[in-house]
Length: 244
Image (cartoon, rainbow, N blue to C red):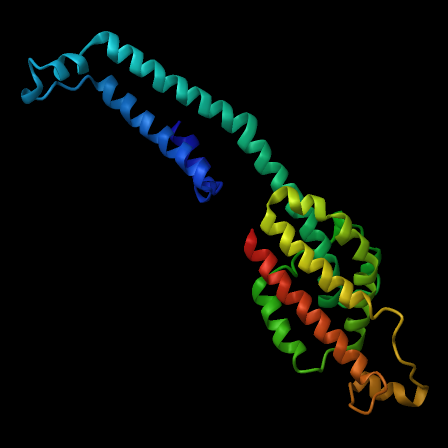
């Protein structure tokens, strides 16, 4: 039972107030059962008193121990049939939602031309690193991002926009906070996706300006807008990851 309690701690069960109360009661019950089983001698001050007789009563001890054992059995049943399945479902839901977010950011990170075609189960989620995201936000502010990174990120955002909307129910099943943040993420994806098909034309002579991210490029302000929208998406992603 102690191993079970430690395992629960490793599973972050103590972060939830209600779960923490149940775990504390479980540990308290185990401690009382150990003390009761040791049959420690009654302190001299209680000998011959009503309380002393009550504490040493075989009937009282038996009933009290049965109550504690019943609680422990119920708690183990609760863990196996409710808490662990619920936690597994939460982890699976978060994995799906994170894969959807990562599909866009991975296209940016690895400049993936076919990022928009990658199925969610095969998306690389290494890009969901908060330190990396914060660094990229700083880099985006320099307005020197490779134009291909911006294009492929936009393509994936356009492809995944409906997925974000459809996954709101799953985010809601985790918590109201996750649902609220998912709505913000969906809005940022929409704002980025709105730029799809709005790319200005550039002649062959102007393409070197586009690649150099020159201010003379006809796509300069378009790329600035994409950088701003991607930066917003990354900032909200950091907030999303902090909820976990």
